[in-house]
Image (cartoon, rainbow, N blue to C red; front, side, top):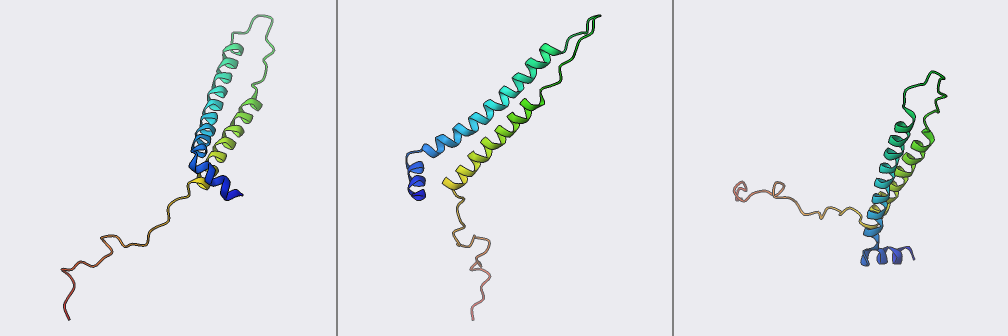
Length: 108
């Protein structure tokens, strides 16, 4: 069953689309985290008045959740890509540097 799923994902290019979609979602999450941080900084960094301002703490939980989501998206995309497209094994044929040249071989 798993092999059939892998075959479908490979032949229909659904796997490649899914990997690209996961990477795209990670990029969107990074952009959203940057925009949220910029928006928070723009709204909360202003001069204090004579009455004083109760500063709200920076929402670190949003940054942490975004970072965890990005890592999970990228790990899932990497794992899926490694499963669908495994690295090619060496063919076992020697390179030109490994073969002895005909000039150096002495006749017996």
